[in-house]
Length: 307
Image (cartoon, rainbow, N blue to C red; front, side):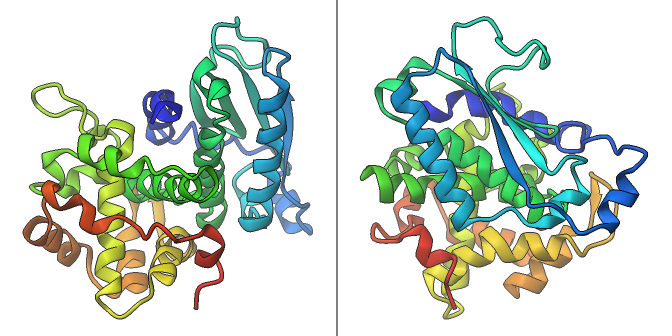
């Protein structure tokens, strides 16, 4: 999908070294987090190059997301400020925000959301990249920045974005996404997709997770496995989108690369990661991608009230 092309090359920065997700703590941060946290909000920095119609849709979508997926106060333990700056502008303009040198593409960088929007986004009225990046902030808040593994980070954000896209734009891009962008390594060595570094390019130099198609397939396969346990589709997605990240916030963490997320996985989904990978390799194929697609009638509101 056009709206996510830039996201592929930039969101990967989130995993490297932790600097992109983790803001540096100020000397007063320990005092701040001991007080009643302020409501987290977004501060818009929208350049004049953005069309008025797109700005209107952007604000409507952000209002919708903040109501559906409020950012938990846990995020105050990650970021020093109780707000996130959103920097948005049109591709082709020289970076209009000198206070943020070198920004480009689409990502969460420290306590900032970066949205460099292409002309295609305006002609299509497309604000889906906003949905993807907002969902990462939601994940960070729930998990207190315990952001592992990569396939659940990106596959979750992508799956949520696609369900929202299907519901509100009346279009379904996920079929083509999975048909064209799922790597064979999903079915031979899924462990590679736990980290950005090991799921970037295969030995032949081919991208392994174009537009996060591979990660998304893995998430949808997990939802299918949960449904085999008798769990509803809505509840299965809620477990993936919400419950896992809450549980991840409780795990022992020595460093970004040393987080016991596998315990969260087994606690929430009632299967071990080894069992899931084994099923992924033995019971799923690329040719069967249509079997994991979400229902066409699924709505995001149903997911977050699931029982």
